[in-house]
Length: 477
Image (tube, rainbow, N blue to C red; front, side):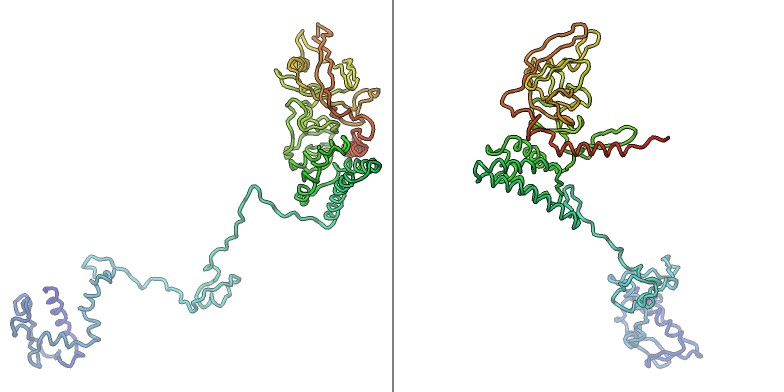
């Protein structure tokens, strides 16, 4: 109540000091001395305004004016500027106090006149041109470049996958070549179907054609785009290459060669060429090494035949290691200590009197040093003791008088077992081993239409050798 009385007193003082009042109920003559205002402290106006009539009256030139009547007579315009509304607005719960206040009250004074002028937007639709700084929207919105208000462009990220399959672009020429290769491969299946229904007199001609096409097959390029067709058509168990490999009607050499390709294709190895999985460098000498990107290399450290087939041919000893036939780049014996030898290579030797009789082989170990048995001889002794069958590969470096010698490269000729061992020279711990070919295998493929390497393989190999020799840098004069 005291607060209300103070506001009334302050408002009355202001009314007396003004030159003229807008209200018609009151008029103050500024030339005549003003009568003293009743003081709230003197008790002229007490806390209860309605108890004493004299205390609610103010003497003026026009007579006595009721205080409450005067307050209620303030016009609407005055009431908007009055301290009553200001006080109510200032302390309203929905309108928190403004930062602007009197310095004597100890509140923060903020100058709002220095605030930057906000750009006036003339259009509710934002500009989306993002092309130049001469945009009409930019000029109207008081900005120099309308592009600054646009959100940054976000490129859509494609999900990454380790097994993502991307489309393979194939040229028209490449498509024709792929189709031609698939047609040639399909001819093998067509001949196989004919053989099933043909008379015995026609089979010889059919098998000759079939053998020629199968021998050409390792050099027929299979494009990755046709891999699905390869698996669905040629690897079908009922009508594809598996059916040919298991058919008792087809000659054994054709079945073996088809089965070699089947095993490769089933793994996904569809590369062609004799040097697949190898890197050739032509410097002063031609050197080859394994391609680290090739993922179909087979470990050679196992006993038995594995996925090899009789007559399988390798251009170089390194390619025999690639396919798991042998485990040494130069040495003729490969294996594991304690288990025995897994494979041997029959090659030229001026130091050892090896005898190759086809089904029977007399094979010498290597000389020991200081009375100790050599590593290769130890492997052969362990294989004999453990009864491990040994893979035998014959090299084209064998003497020319050896009829089992392949024309080029190395050929896998099946499994042999050591029947006996004999110490030939005690001082050097030199042993000779007798190996006998395991029964039940197909014949050694050194002659006839089933011989390996095939004429096509020999041609391709010699072309590679010529190309490597021609690529070597010429000697400076």
